[in-house]
Structure formats: structure tokens, C-alpha cells
Amino acid sequence: MKRFDCLKLIAAEAKDALVVSSAGATTLEWNALRPSDGNFRVRTLGLCSSIALGMALGLPHRRIVALDGDGSLLMNLCSLPTIARMRPNNLLHVVFDNEVYEASGSKKTATASCTDLFAIARAAGIEKARWANSVEEFAQAVSAALKGEGPYFMGAKITTDRTEVPPYPMDEVENKYRFVRHVEKTENIEIFKSGLPASYA
Ligand SMILES: [Mg+2]
Image (tube, rainbow, N blue to C red; front, side, top):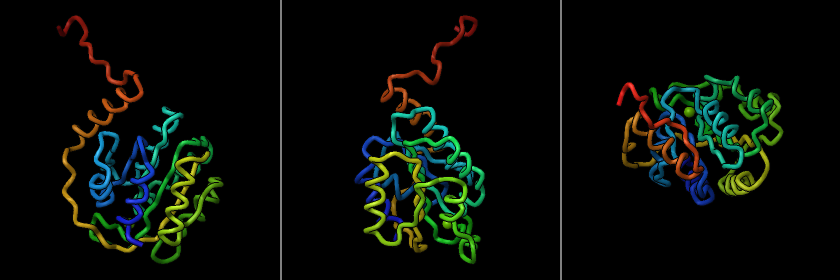
């Protein structure tokens, strides 16, 4: 499977879901398919799943999608038992497993030899965990996960093919502010306090 084909399927179903994506090409491909201020790029390897978990718990009525990679998840496996224990039913955690640390030179990860991320997720306590073994299975699973009660973990073995897309159009700081302003507007809540204290006025 190609990651880009899988991302197209998610984009077709995502609607207003907030999407947290891991460092690397996944984010660029996703943003090319669904450009939105509701996309949040995580530059620190490993934190995608934990940040998505926090969003899912903070906004329990909103669909949250984490677009993770094998290298990233391997660096933060402790997020899986936490997701299992907190049980956010609005979280879909997708892991694109291409068996390499793609963003840093494509050295092999542990999944290239012996590690099964689905088995780890299931053993952590995430009941709705599965591999999607074809694009058709992926489509069916995404559709079900974006309508049903999670948390869902879905692994997809993908090739190392990258799709040529434009670079990400902003840096981390702008991404943070635009994302939070998007959440404030669409949820009608205040996250950033905009008023300066009187001593600064
Ligand atoms: Mg990888």
C-alpha cells in the first residue's frame, strides 16, 4: 500500500476532525490532501499519539485522528497503555508502518525485523486494534472508526514511496496559533487569553 492512497481515504471521511500528524512526509502529504487549520504538525518524534490523546480527552465530542509512523510510535510506546486506560472513544490512531525512520535517512526500525505494533497495542489494552492489509480494508476500517466508538488503533504496512507535494506552508509557531484559533472558533471556547494585564496596557 502507498501512504498517499490511504491518506486520500481518510481525507474523504475526516470532515471536521482535528488531525495530529507526526514529523516527516506524512504531514506534507496529508496537508496537500486536506489543507486546514485543523491540522497540527508535531515536530518532536514520538509525541503524536500523546498530543492526540490529550486533544481527544479535552474535546470528547470531536473526532481526533493521529497520523503516526512506526519510528515515532516506537519512541513513545508508553502512549498505548495510556490510551487504553483513558479510553477516549473519539480517537483514531493510525500508524503507517514503512519499517524505516523515513525522515532521518531511512534506517530500519524494529518493525522491519520482529516487532508487531498491532500486537503491542492489543496487549496494551486497546481492544479495537487491527492491521489493514489492503486499501479496501483500510477504507472500510477508517469509515467504521470515524463513526464508531473507539479508541481505535489501525496499523497499515506501507511502501517507502513518497508522493511529491508542496512543502508545509508554515513553521511550528504559526501552526500552533492557527490550530488553536481554529479550535477556539469551531468549538466556541477560549484557549489563549488575549487580554493583556492592565500593567502591560
Ligand atoms: Mg517509518
